[in-house]
Amino acid sequence: MKQAFWKRLYSYVDDVLIEQMEGEHNEELHVLLSHGRYQLCTAHAIYSYADKYDNFRLSFKELDWDAYSIDSVLILGLGLASIPFMLEKMGKDFKYTALEIDENVVHLANKYVLDELTSPIEIIIGDAHAFMLGNARKFDLVVMDVFVDDVIPQKFRSTRFMSALENALAPGGLAMYNLLNQTKADKKDAEEFFEIFKANFPSAEYKDVKGNKMLFYKQAR
Image (cartoon, rainbow, N blue to C red; front, side):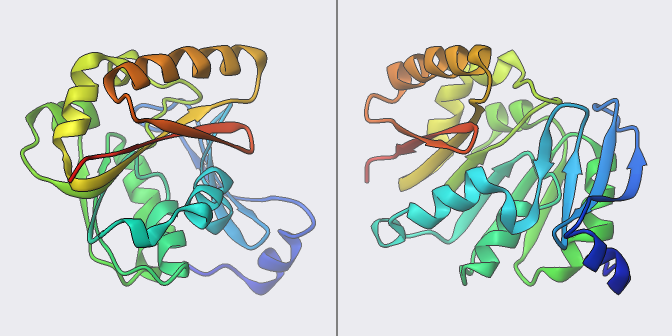
């Protein structure tokens, strides 16, 4: 959905509130227009920010795409579909499956962003953890971006989930796991979780990107 020209212009001066509602799993959901892009926020976190969602934008920009053969992408945590949005902007032609537990987030994505995309996107409304535990499909890229406000639910940190994550990767596939890395507490938590992640995926690496820590694991071929 396109906004009036004056709103888009003013959004480069200050954020414009477009819509707010309560989510089924989020007390507050705010759609803002910021620098001409839609931004989905909660009280303490940014869920989506089009091609300015810097933690993924910078990670994708520096990724050696030639090292991977990517066709299918699994997104855990849809938001306003920033990930397919920016990958399309980069000229990537992928097929997407996205898990989102909050129907109101899916409603907002449909209302504001999805009609701008040309990539095929299968949206599954449900618990990403339950999906992963029962999943038998393989994906070339799996992106973990599940938050409730600014917290990753503990079940997504378990060894059981790590095993499901590995099982979802096609040979040579890539997993990306997004963590907050802003406050002192965030940084301590991210460092501790990376050790857990690396215990499950010994070849794992990470990159610090603008207040986030992005973890990477490449599946063997």
